[in-house]
Image (cartoon, rainbow, N blue to C red; front, side, top):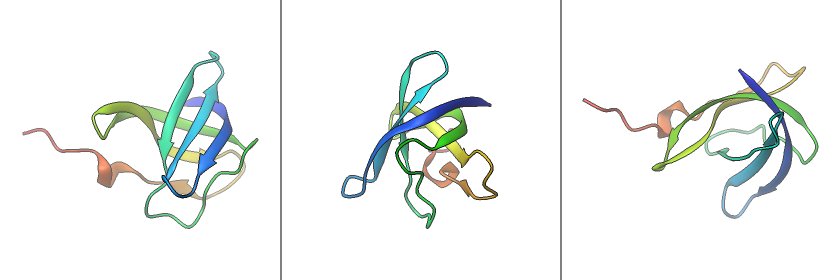
Length: 78
């Protein structure tokens, strides 16, 4: 799992931005969840292909039991 800090989240667009420990900026989508990481929250996540782009998936706020599950957004390849 990678770790980073939430830089921003746009409620209207449903997309946020994480700055990871390698100083890379990675998008995340928080559709279908009640728990949205706030700016400054420390998170752990995996990298996956979402909506045709690399993005943070399975985002979890560190020290929180809630995970943002975006696996339903990943297209299945047959």
